[in-house]
Length: 270
Image 1 (cartoon, rainbow, N blue to C red):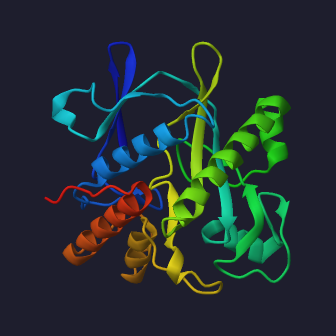
Image 2 (tube, rainbow, N blue to C red):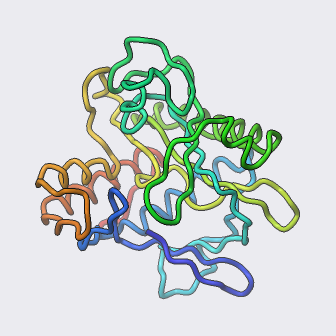
């Protein structure tokens, strides 16, 4: 959950401690969540800038009241496609595979199970809906919407970013099962990575040492909250359930573990 502000001609992206699941904002905040998402994004933006340009200007030249939750960014004309890379089978991708043997039109081998590693990472775009749920689309759908040249570039950049990030993360004990990127055009017409980058809100993070195909490994992302909420009997309609204090604390711990494993830095104790 982010708030956007205009700031001296730039864009100020401020991440809150709110958490949303199934497109519903829950009434309970996760302490430090906004700062964790921002600082992990900043780390990835610096590490991946040789793969593709990104919109980050500064995470320190921001109004002091936002602390470490804000990024100053260049304005982008965003492309209306959610660019998802998948290296493992999980979530909505798993459900589509079980029905059709494909994900976003990409045919996959028979016999895969939850958590299976795919033969190679795949590009599985979705719509970028402002109301309602995002929906799977195929690469051909993207071509029809924005043209083949741009679609090819989106797919190539998405997979290169994912492959580079996934290799780093798994060497530090974290499997990036899937992740979402958003791109836009800067004022010079350059394709640029925007929004956030490979965080616990935009990715599926698993503990590598616990991964086994057919089993659900411990999640260092908001899947932990999704699973808890569904377990309460919630029907996925507003209002969402108040998050139990033990779940709040464990969610924060998992977000911190993801940050520390990936970056190698220690999150400040509060």
